[in-house]
Length: 338
Image (cartoon, rainbow, N blue to C red; front, side, top):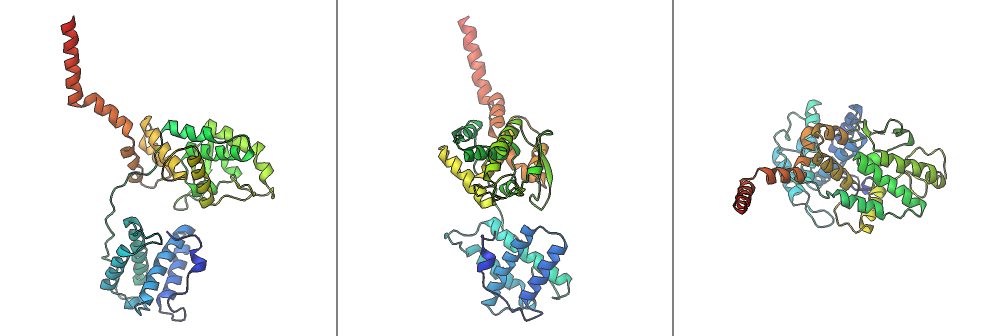
């Protein structure tokens, strides 16, 4: 994922004057993605990944798509495997796979445009990605602890309570929360319109009565006092009256979690994971959870069935043969007493 500000800081790569060069081909490819209505975020990620590849090619005097062969791409894949981030950690398999996916898309497009005679990336394999449970699933009691620890004696505390109530009630992502406008909340119907979700898709999700109550309290008592510009449409605004960025929203939520004495990885996504897990444990159908979270594939949502351990524990306690054997022994003892 590209870093904040990466576009402004990066040096030029490739030869922008060569009409058949990698740099010019990248510009045309990005234009193609925009015409095909890929989301702005997707275009940025693809650009970043291919930019990194072109920079690597520059160091090896590879300037045109035709210079790139399958063995060269395999060398680049090995480079990604050993590459380290600024913190010294290696790229995760997911990140490596995302880079390779962008390169495969790029060379597939080059081939279709007859800019190269054959596709050297057609047989590139993605790295194997292990199964990992979501980080940061809180219990209901821990979530209530966070909510009740917020200082409501000042107006920002009321706003912060509303923010976390919305995240917990709807399970929306931090980007989706920062995109919310006032008109996206329909308190009478109890729904929230989520715009520009992942994949640039809109959806409508239910929002609970408690979250509505705190949001309306914030809108009535707090938000008007924070606005230097009354025309601001954002639902959630900073103390300076500006729309929250996803980064700032995550920092605020993380601060509230720490202040409540809860030790958990993550911030906004903690409430998304926790909501899905707790609803499943309470009997919600996984297909409803899929729609609520905005997952395109059911397989993505099914990860929460592995997190939801309480129901599994209940079935284990009720059906495991060791438990049944103990129950029979206890029944026999009671009969002897009689």
